[in-house]
Image 1 (cartoon, rainbow, N blue to C red):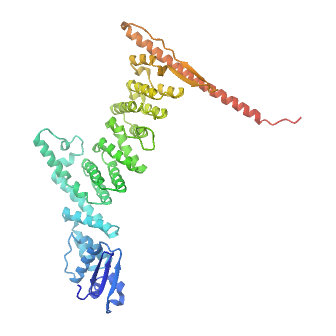
Image 2: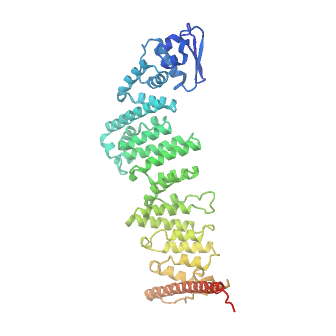
Image 3: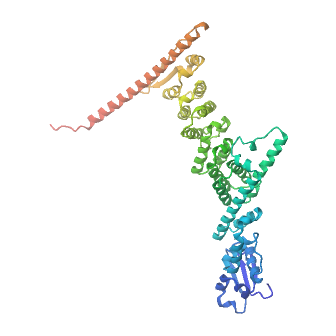
Length: 499
């Protein structure tokens, strides 16, 4: 090629290639247009390409084709670069052969398809590369689906169930070995696909979902993909990886997405400040499975700007998502018990505002709680840590308790608990006065325990009535005050009469 070279071609500033003008222009419409009449003239000519697809490697492939007068083998390993370069240089004879090669794309081997996709990645933004990538990806997914079904047809059909024997370990060594072999046959492609860019992985997953590929396997791949790719990713790359993971998990069968793993993704997403729409999707998924969560899952540290120890607003949103799903029965009772445990955990936090604590107490419908023992103890701890609460704030918390759902021991404890007996309230002149709810200690022998509980119940109701009465008095005082102010304003607005 260098013996009669009179054309110097600079490829993207990475390499300079010397060619013969007449030979290359006989095939390339692009160079023929650029050189014009200088094709047949003597002297060297230089051409600079700044955005040649595939760089010097693909340019050399087309050049070899031209120098060998078309005697060049087009195969899966070179067709991507060759096709895109020929399109750029307008070499029809090359395009005929590359398109012919692509007709049999569905019969290519898995490594050939994967190599073609990797080459499409290297071409970056190119309409031709995008078109080829779509064909290659479709063939790759089709081959993967067939391979998995052939490897274990019965297992692939039933693996979506969390109780599937395919994903349960056995104490028997033979069963364990069989499990490993079956699992390997279904997940061998995990590491293979990791070489693809986030954009191509996203396309891959959408095709897999559209072909109804096993949801449990896809779920496991997503968590594996996120874990492996995070090791060397930048913050922006991590956000993209989580976005792909969350978007795909959203469309999978809920039973195939472990709640514990979702909380792991949540903690990562909170640290990366993901956009609100993605976070909403993730919280909705977790909320729908809140009955499977544990207390440790919920104890997410509060964002840096907040003074709370734990992220209370997050738990409130998860609870709302669960309730919006109209779940009841045993699931609702599980969540009620979980939230009560959480309330007890956050109650001693001195920075937790009474309005937030009250929101937690009322987040679950009262019908879901068979007992108020847990929330009574939580309120007791909260009042201990927040001695400066106003009368209204204390009353709001205490009103969430139901006498019928408290044990006799707890009702007796309340009657002796100073935090529940003395409540201060401001009057109109902001003067302090104290309402003392006196409950006499009842001394009854153990033989009349039922009578004791009955009397304590009456005492509790008396306390509730006194609180309600106090609230009504305060409301009446506010109404009177507003009425007086309104009357004074009306008098001032009357015009003076002329004498």
